[in-house]
Length: 177
Image 1 (cartoon, rainbow, N blue to C red):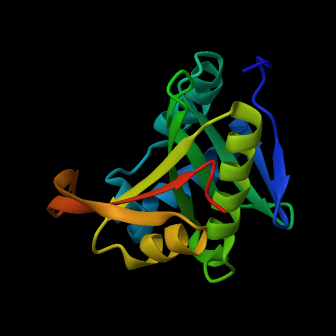
Image 2: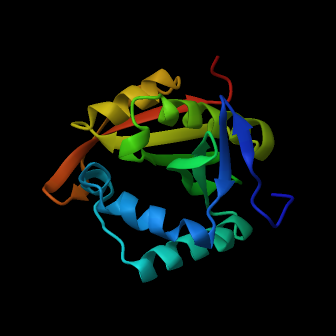
C-alpha cells in the first residue's frame, strides 16, 4: 500500500472513512445491539471501543487489514472491514454490520460493492471472501446482492454465543463481472 494513511472510499452514495476516536459511542452502541452481537460474538466497553478504533491504523500500516465507518448522508450507518488481508496472495476477507436505524436501505451491499471494487482496483486483490453463519440470512442476501458467489459451507467453523455454526463461504474474484 502506498499511503501510510488509510484512505476514504466513495461509491454507491456512501462514504467509507477510517474510524475516528469520536466514533467511540457509536461503536459501543453497535456492539450492544443484539442483532450485531449475535453474529460478532462480543460487546464492547468504552475502553474496548477506544482500543478497537485505535488498532485500525496499525493494521493498515502493517498491510494486514483496514476498517471503515460507513457514512450515509453524513452519519455513521455501519462498518465494513478487510478483517483479513494478504497482499502477496491477493486475498482479503470482509466483515460488515449496519446499525439498526440504518437497516433496510441496502447500505451493506452498497458498501460491500464499494470496498471490493476499490480493493480490486487499488490494492490489486484477486479474491475477496465473505463468511457468515448459514442461519444469518440477511448477511447471505448482502453477499449475493453484491455479486459474491456462494461457494460452499464450512462445517462448525465459527463459535457464536449459542454454539458452533456452519459458515457459508462467498467469494468474488477480480475477474468476475
